[in-house]
Amino acid sequence: MIAVHFDKPGGPENLYLKEVAKPSPGEGEVLLKVAASALNRADLLQRQGQYAPPPGASNILGLEASGHVAELGAGYQGPWKVGDPAMVLLSGGGQAQYVTVPAELLMPIPAGLTMCQAAAIPEAWLTAFQLLHLVGNVQAGDSVLIHAGASGVGTAAIQLARMVGATPLVTAGSQQKLQRAEKLGAAAGFNYKEEDFSEATLKFTKGAGVNLILDCIGGSYWEKNVNCLALDGRWVLYGLLGGADVNGPLFSKLLFKRGSLITSLLRSRDKKYKQMLVKAFTEQILPHFSTEGPQRLLPVLDRVYPVAEIQEAHEYMETNKNVGKIVLELPQ
Image (tube, rainbow, N blue to C red):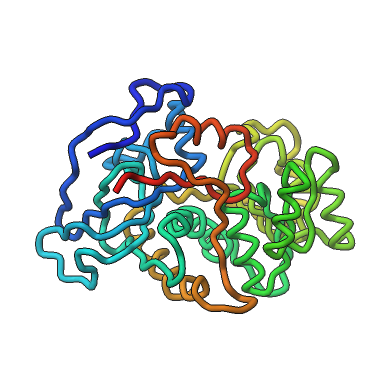
């Protein structure tokens, strides 16, 4: 089969398509023939040599995919049949023509969605769902500050926060991104390049601050985050795009707010946790992608590339211009 490959860590120019052995599904697994796979920041970090896959995971890039069930592992007795369309959360391996996956991590593709739209759901939407509900304990009436509000996770978190009756606020780096976020349901958006998002957040909340922050930035935002966190607020850290170092009195400022700093990663979670997450998401959230009306959820696609243009896709993601997901189509 064809898969995205790189021989040494580095820039996008190191990526190419390579013929590799097609995997076989083990016990309790299925083989998915991949139609599309979305790009994630983790793919860029892995390509740069900064984010190794978890032990036992495929070295091939790709944390989510959509396609059709091609083969069932030995002794599989579950509901999935050969030919069924499905989308899946992965620890790696999605950017190839075939990938093996534990059957419990498969999700049905909501009616009316294309394979490319479906590929944009698993990693981003499960991450947003996990951060808001399982980690951040979001409640109706909460105000939620979502950094990188135009990203895949950001565009999902806006819609999920709205659905539960919370008020989503976002940061982003351009007017176009803020406008798109507000169309998806953000109550307000702040351009971090042009204003202090912390002061703008405090102004919007009339000095109270936000109950929950979803933060993929880290180091460079710590002081502003604590500044606009409400008393007893939860600050959920799930990425370090702004660096890992903190200089200053983080603990005393957080203690003064009685704030909680919670960290979370999804890729390195064990199979049992991911099964629980996929089950909860499938039952509680997935039906809303198919229903018409104000509660309808929508994966946001920015661009679709044929997988042969993998270098261009990585280069585009590195410009930070995308609103929503960048998706790769695999040859059928």
